[in-house]
Length: 434
Image 1: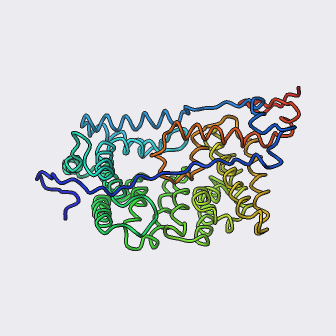
Image 2: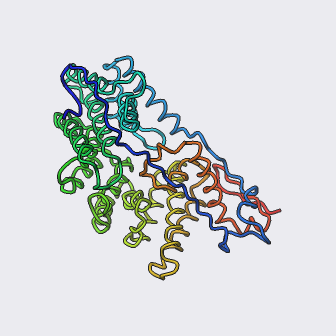
Image 3: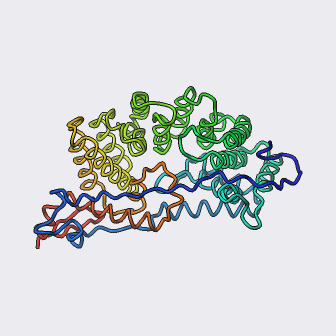
């Protein structure tokens, strides 16, 4: 069976519906029954929020920059301006250009350039037939023919390789699971094998390209023994682009037991990366490698060295003090604190965790947080590595705002209960007595 075609015959068969629509439950940390979340009398945290004056930034610079870069990639691809697209992706990749939150612009343009074909494929797999007027097999072939015309262009090769990787995941489903239908598994591997064949023509080190190295890491789930190459591939990527914590976060996620590692290996790798990047991050890399892993699988809290982790949070924010990072860390620590309370409050095991995480959260709020980015808090509730594309941005942001205000009020509860108003400004925090 052909899952994609490289000849010029017209492929008319539609894919079977295989991509199930996932739903994520967004749960909030509603702990108003706790004593530290009650106000005077019958007042709850919600009753006191009018005294918490903190800016809510619903449209961050990162979101605008990301949308612009994706749209530029999509526009140039639709216009078939392959030379311009190649030049811009290469320039961003070589210069390590990112949004204000650290997303590589090359990655965003690559996503935009392949998005028409990938969305058509996802629609066909979800609904059992292509969208009206869409023939995604023709879209795949069109990009393959483009690559034949530009065989030495690694930026254009990345577009086609990532297209196959995305469609492979659409066939398989993104969860770390083994119960995948044989047809779906075969399609997944066929697309990943094609992506690997494309990428094998280009050496990331020779091209000094983080984008190529990141794509090689993205191939790992399609390989027979991905664990054998996982650490080496990610270490190579981090060496090419050590200032970008997203690579460390991805490594930690893949080191989870549900993927290719275990918590002991994850902790060891976090220490290795922290040692190799100490001049840049201090202990920060230890926190970044554990970052997504702890939210995806909170059992890791039993293994993490909490003092080292919190030192890493502080070092990371000292070196990268933007509000995106401050919101990431605050939302993470709040969610981890809730997990620790739920898991260990009754057993007495790791009784050090909840107060340590609470103290770390308070530190981030007092020393670094100056505005709320609601989407980050919404994503933190369901784990940053998730399939939240099926959840509307508006719904996620609304839930994130609610959670963030509730959380940020906690370090100031005594003052709020006593009538204080707390003002957050770029210069710091001011508490005004009544």
